[in-house]
Image (cartoon, rainbow, N blue to C red; front, top):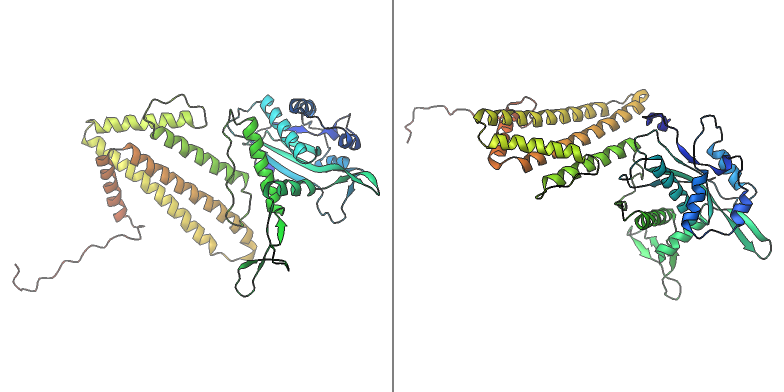
Length: 413
């Protein structure tokens, strides 16, 4: 349902689903065969299987998973059937079918090589949404296990390779336990006084190891042409995932502000912009600078007054809109009807996003005025705005008129 809401075009996805093909592979043979060391050979083999998903196909991800794990052993304590990874590529990559096939093949090959060689049973890159640089990979690592008692068996493990990757990267740390009296975590020592060590292989380290490995892989293979940045480490336990809509809005705002700042601070002629918003921002900056030059070079007091009034009205409208959003949020928070709780919660989320966007607009506008306008004109605009705002009935800090002192007939100096 969420994917349907994000649909903006009617374009089928590209899929890698080897078990859905007529010549589906035998999972036993795929796991037992020697791994190919040449990366280009592996990528070409994957690309040969990639196709535009047929509309009539009813072969689901669960069907693909069942075909992949068939006949393999699995721990009875395992609660999950499969793993899912969303592999993000640089958004500067030009969208074309050839590039998207390459992204899909690179993501599949990376997961396979990271998780034992035969892990991916289905992967997809959606082309009907706004973002087209992410690959969904579904996998269940299948490997050979050798024991003296049972010989060679094939197993499915969702944690084996993840833990190994985390241990290789992050090693061990001293174990700690929470002190009930102080609330602090105290280090643990054995009977001989040596520190007790534990592996850094919990879920959080497994996820971090995969993210680090993916960043390094992209840096090595596409970093010479595209900018690759590692995500910032979390500081709290808040949810990992933003909704695609919130994330897209956040990314677009950051790109717009970065491009605006780059062009405003430029002191030398700029090259033709390649990234998003480059042309739009360049034109906007050029238009604003032209207006400022015209106003500051003797266009007349009337133009200056009009510019002051327009700027004051823009800031005032933005602030009034933001305040209206805040009041709406406050009002909705007061609703306590149980039947309307879920609807109110969703309304609050959307209003909160709107307030953040209005704040970003105000910051960009203020920064733009500060950088582009001459000091004297900017001060006049500020004074004009203060004059209007101080008279506005919605201003909570509206100054009161001072009371005139009464004359009591005494002599004055």
